[in-house]
Image (tube, rainbow, N blue to C red):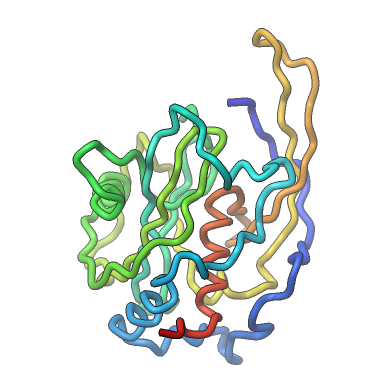
Length: 254
């Protein structure tokens, strides 16, 4: 994979405004924070029931050229990621993310959802839960499987990713991440995910190599979510932004 290096970051204005301009109260909480696990699970399941009505991506990188959508190339591998929501006593409803070590071949140093390849005898849910446990060192107790967000084709690693949404019990111990796959565990509160003030536009450089030699560089812009001075972008940002949109859409009409 051509190397990517961070160049610049400045406030990013979404191509269209958030569905709710100010979804938080004065304490910075999300409206979902008052929901019980059962209420949140039903809330999400209702909005994920009809895949044809899922919101369209708003955060594709400038060089995506639709590569996150459309026909899947031959040789694509199936993968699953866990969009696991649990109630943090201090932060409210939260999604755990991981920062990948810079030694990995694909997406080195990037912030991702826990996940990986779907084995031949697995469905996306089983794979997502297995990968969650392998990467974070804790087997999640699943309260509810709510459904899936839109699949995303990740061009760099040639994976077709199934984002599996689950509501899980609050972990009863600290994370014990696998150091080979995880450099750091990062927790993302829904209150930040839903807040447009945490959206940024970043500039990336991508080396163009011929026969192993760098001959040029492409410079492109990408939307990102800022969390504690760290940036989430690419397919992970697409998935999380779709979740943020779903949290503010009307229930499915039956």
